[in-house]
Amino acid sequence: MAKAKLRLSKKAYLARASELREQLVQLQVELKQAPFKVLLIIAGPEGAGRGNLLNTLAEWLDPRGVETFSYHAPTDSELAHPHQWRFWNSLPGIGRIGLYAGSWYTETLRDEARSKSALGHITQEAERIRAFENLLAEGGTLIVKVWLQLSKIAQGRRLLALRSDPATSWRVTDEDWHHHRIYDRLAETARIIRSKTDRPGAQWTIIDAQDERARDLKVGQLLLTQFRRQQRKRARLTLRGGVARAVKPLRPAGLRRLQALPLDQDLSEKDYNTLREKWLGRLSRAVRAAFLAGRSIVFAFEGWDAAGKGGAIRRLTSAIDPRDYRVISVAKPTAEEKHAHYLWRFWRDIPHNGRMAVFDRSWYGRVLVERLEGFCRPEEWKRAFGEINSFERELTDHGMIVVKYWLHVSHAEQLRRFREREGTPHKRHKMNAEDWRNRKKRGAYEIAVGDMLALTDKANAPWHLVPADNKRFARLEVLRTASRQIEAALEQ
Image (cartoon, rainbow, N blue to C red):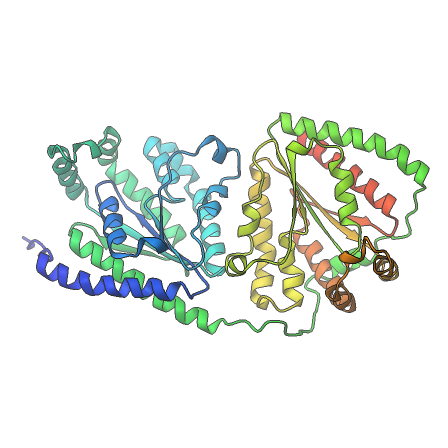
C-alpha cells in the first residue's frame, strides 16, 4: 500500500512564503519598467482551491499592480460584440498582472458540463483560443497557465468538508455536485483542451492541488520563473527602429493589380450630383436594413496621403444618422499602445450590433508604415497578414460587414495636391515633413500595398481599389461599392 504523501508543515510554509512574497513584490517593481504584461490563468476542477489561491496571491502581491478577472455568462453588451471582444477589453495594462479565476476556457468547460454534444465543438473552440493566446504571446504578453489537479476522491472530500462547515456551506452548489458526478468526462474534456492549447508562449503547468500550502508556493514560484525567462527573451528582441531595408514583394500579383488600376476616370459635376443622390439613398436604405437585422458595419479606409480619404468618409457618413456611427481617426500609437499587441487598440473600437465604425487608417498600418519604417521586425509584419485575416474573420463570423478601401492616386496628382495644400491657408495644417518623406518612398510603399492586397483580399472582407485622381469619381465609387457589399451581405 502506497504511503500518503506528507503535507507541507505550517512552519516550513510560512518561512518559504515570506521569502517568496518579497520576490514577487520585487517582480512587480521590475514589471513596471518592462514593456509587457502578465496573465496568470488559474483553472481546474471544482474544489481545487482557485479562490483560495487567488486570495493568497492577492495577499502576497501589491494590489496596485494587480487586476483580477472572473468571467460569467456573457452580458447582453458582450453578446452584441464578437466573441473575443470582452477578453481583449479586459486585458491588464502594460506593467501589470492579471489574475484570471475564469478565462476564455470557462465557457467551453461549462458547455461540456451541460451536454456531451458540446464535445464536438472542442477542436474549433481550442483553435480559437490557441490563436488568441498566440496573438497575445507574440505581441509580448507573458501568459502563465496553471491547471490545479485534484482527484475525484479528493474533490468529493473537499466538497463534503466545505458543505459541513456552516461558514463555507454556501460555496457548494448543486452544479458543483453535478460536476463531481461527471468528473471523468470533464477531466477528459480538460485534457483534450490542454493538449490542443499547450503551445510555446502559452504552455500549461499541472500542479497538484491536494496540499494547499504546497500548491500556493508552486504557483508563486512558477510566476517568478516565467517572469525571469520573459525578461531575458524581451532583452534579446530589442528593436532597431527606423532602419532602411530593401523591399521585395511577397506576392507580385498584388503589385500588378495596383499598377493596372486605371486612374484616368472622369465624372462631370452634373453627373456626380445626379448619381450621388441616387447612391446616397441606396446606401442609407442598406445601412438601415443592416441595423434592423442587428448587423454592424466596419469600414477601413487606407490610401495615399492626399488621396481624399477624409472627403470620401464625409460623403459616406452623410447618408447615416450621426447617432449610429463613429469615425475613428488612427494616429501614431501611444506609449501604452506601442507595447501592447497592435490589434488591441482596434478591438476597443469595434461597434456592437446595429452600429457602424469608420476607421480613417486602420490595423493595416502594421504591414505598411510599421513594415517600411522598421517599427517591427520582419517576422512580425509577415506574421501580421495571417493575424489580420483571423481578426477580420472573427468580425464577419459574428455577422459584421467589413468594407475595406484603398484610395489610389497617381504620383503626379499627389504632388499637385500637396502643393495646393501648402498654398491654401485652411489646408496647410494637413501637410508636414513626414508627408514629403513618405512620398520619396512611394516605390517601396507600392510593394507593401501590393502584398497587402494579395494576402488580405478575402471573400469575407474584400478590398475595393478606388481610382482617386478624380475626387468626384472616387467619392461616388465609395458609395456604390459600400451599398452593393452591404446589400450582398444581407442577401446571404
